[in-house]
Length: 180
Image 1 (cartoon, rainbow, N blue to C red):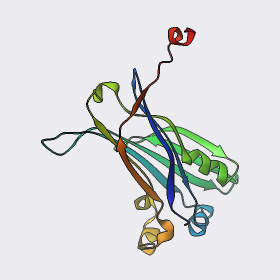
Image 2 (cartoon, helix red, strand yellow):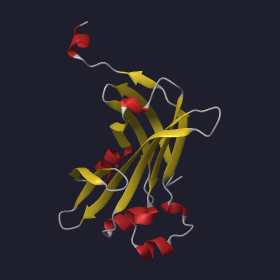
Image 3 (tube, rainbow, N blue to C red):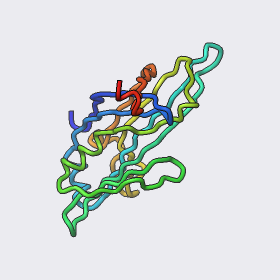
Image 4 (tube, rainbow, N blue to C red):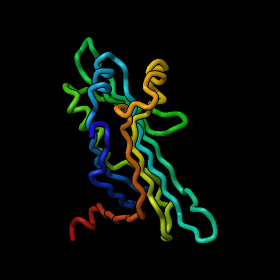
């Protein structure tokens, strides 16, 4: 089904400086979405990760939250695709901007989330935790005429959500550990 997103893999690992998430998401852009891109309308994809500590006496407590925005735009003068990555939700800052020759290359970069820091190590203790991961096309960031015209159109719905117990793989890349 066009527009449906699927999660290929989702892995977390604990390092000394934080908790990192690596994921593979796959989706197919429907023709109407691709047409909007070719007309110069940028699309914003959002990845969100939340870590909750399980509590028996109350609702689970959120201990960490991370948001990453990926802005995909077509540059008609250069005929290149521009992908900008921003971390943070309140005041996003651009961490990376890169150009691609084809839409397939740019989409491939969107589909791979690699070593994304979602929490500090001190935020996640030894108790049981859950991870909620969401990936979606953010329709609220499209120009207002598009938002009004697309209400209820399934072609514009690209989203997935996955919840799982947090399994932290300990990775030790210190030089002493590599010599053994």
